[in-house]
Structure formats: C-alpha cells, structure tokens
Image (cartoon, rainbow, N blue to C red):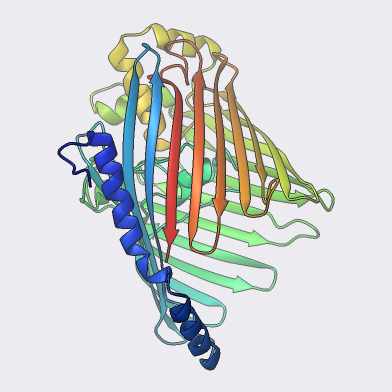
Length: 432
C-alpha cells in the first residue's frame, strides 16, 4: 500500500478523509449474506424503533479552481454536522446543532478548522399555544430564495461558506444568544425576540464561539402573522440599540395550483451602505445623515408535474451604491473598495442596488434519486454574472454531489473580483 510519504499531499489528504468516512459508516454495510439474513430476521421480530434524537452526517469534498491568472488551485474539506433534539417531558425540550469544517489549505484567516455552533438551547411549553426558548437560536426570516431583506439576524452569522447556494448560507450559520417567546392561535402567531449585547464585534474564527459576531449590540424583534382571506402576511419590527426601527413584510400568494408569488420588503431610516461599512471599521469616520432606505425581493415560482421548480426574482437595495456611485467606488483606493466588499459580504447585503436572480431545481431528474439545481445571478450595474450548477444523487444513507461555479465580469465588478474563473467541487456525504 502506498503511504502518505510517497503519495502527493492532495491524494494523501483525500485518502485519509475517505477512510474516516468509511469508518464512520462501517456498521451500516454488512458484506456477509448470512449475517444480513440474521439481521433481517431479528428486525422482523422487533417493534418499530423510535426515531433517534440524533441526526448527523460527514462529508468529504475535493475542489479544483482555474484562476484568472492562468494558474490553478486545489482544495479538500472534511465536514461533520450533528443535530440533537430531545423531548425531556411534554413541556421541556433540548436542542443542539453544530458543524465543523476542516479545510486544506487553511482559510484566509489561517484557520484550518472552523466550528459553527448553529443552535444550542432549551424550550419550555407552558401551554399548548405558548412556547418559550432560550439559548443560541437561529432566527431565520424571509420567504425569498436569493436575498432576504427581513432576515434581520443574518449579519456576521456565516463563519464557513462552503457553497454559494443561498439555502446553504441560511442553514450553515451560527445563531444568536436569544430569548424567544411565541404565542400561537388558529389563524396566526406572535413572536418576541430579545438578543442582548454580550461582547464587542470581533470576527474570531477557529473553535471560538464568536459571541461578539452575533451579540455585539442589543437587538429586539416583533413578528406577527395573521391569515386574512387567502393571504397570511407577516409583519415585523426590528430594533437595534442606537439605530432607528426597521420594518418588514413577508407576503406569499398562490396564483394557481403551480404558481406562487412572493414579496419580501424591509424599510427604515439608515445610513448609506458605504457609510455604514466605513463607520463599522473606523469609529472616527464621519457618516452622513440617515435616510429612508428599503430592500425588496420579489418573484414567482412555478412547479411542473415532473417536480421541476423554476424561480425568477428581482432584488433591490436602496442603501447600496447605484450605477454611478458603484463606478466611483471601483476607482477609489483599493483598501476602501475591499473594506466595502468585506462589509457587504459579512452582513449579507446586496453589494450594488439591483440584482436579478434565476433558480431551477429538478427532483428525480432523468432517473430516480438524482436532483439537479442551477442558479444564475446578474448584476445590472456592472453586468457581472455568476453561474452555478449542482447535481446530487442520494440513496438511503449516502449522497454524492458535484458542483460547478463560474464567475464572469471585469476585474472590480461584483463577481469579477473572484480570483477563480471556474470552480469544480466533488463531494461524498454519509448520513447516520
């Protein structure tokens, strides 16, 4: 057998990752036919087992990127994701969700391992229609697919971006330390969230829980949903200490059996996004006056009889630079431009004022268990584009995935800034 001293570093790391995955799932693949028969007989005599409180998966991934300067770059990753949800009594429940990403090479911060504590807390149900939660909670809001103006807790929450898929960014992020109360009734619900300041804003990586990223200021949210005829709108009020309130609305309507219209809106008095970025990194920066700003994500989704879902959305952020301001920012000194880009990425806001988004998902495409997804994002201000394609084949306890990402645009455009021209990623995921 070839050892790691004689093999190339990439092959060696990938071999080690595969061995780890196989060892995790070795118990689930008996090779002896007699043993399989005995297990089947034993299973037939048992009563149906209760669903496990644990859910977990391990994933190995290997990537290749073609760089704009003509070179190339390879990468490997091992991810372990675990979720725990335990009902202690009819009134009490414990929940926990965590993810660890090990990357080769290390991230730009020099960290090879990044731990994301997605959720950890306790839930109390004093009555059938009342819920009280405490702990690190992922409060996700918004109904749009590509951009969520009402997802007020998304800023600084992503620690390890393993995919540009918006669903992955919403799922694989850290929660905020929060107290949450919910009141339910037949036609609606009311939610109150309080997230206190616990530490200064400082982006820490590695194994640090990074409390300051999610709890660097006192934040409060009120969300109410009420069915009105064929509509069930959701209204939100978000308040952050030292800032004026922001308002939100989520509205979804079924146009026919196959078509859904979505509207997501938020508005409030705030700084321009460039001023907010410079002020966040330089307290001495003199920002302009706050003005009324609004963010919108609206679109239509259509689902065919063969499980193909097509989504088209238009996104708007009045706080972001318009066409003229964006061209000016691209010619500013590079540190200012990069600082603004970093801020927009960390707060998950649109970099420019407008964005067009197309998405398609086809379940059981061509053959059973094969899912195909594709995404195109277009920036009208600089005409840069991102193309993304994913194929996933899944069975009972394993899944194989393949992704392709292509970035196109001028050097300092939204997607032209990426060092890579095209990326490929192959992954194997095993569930428990």
